[in-house]
Image (cartoon, rainbow, N blue to C red; front, side):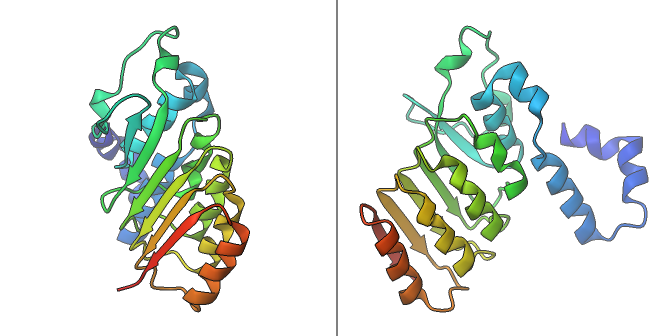
Length: 198
């Protein structure tokens, strides 16, 4: 799919005059843009899984032990069977390029209880603020070594009132880590918060 886009006449015309950084930002924005028609066509969970995987993230379906890592392994189902495929867990590592622009895909994915961002540099404060979409369902969140996250994003996690476990590792741009973590502990009293900074 990506190869066809890169080879298209429209794409070649668009990149004329763009520098490399702008080009990749444009690609990321394009692949993260919400497609309402696709959600209507295949339902919120499969559309969300498509968005996540075409941007390098992984999902684990409810009732399954393994992650689905490759876009080609998404189920091709009839409307009757779509409700069997409910996202429970999301993993975005170094290779992922999911951004806040696509977080609206999480809407109506009511079984996502675990999310992990591990070295995912496209995750920033805006993304963590948008994670509020999952405030009624998310019970476990891990954020490790995400270079574009700072106090503003971490403080916004106070809205995730269902969280039972929050793990924060190597968040380099916290101006006052102790104060920020103490603030979260007061706002999320039922949550076990672990903070590690190498």
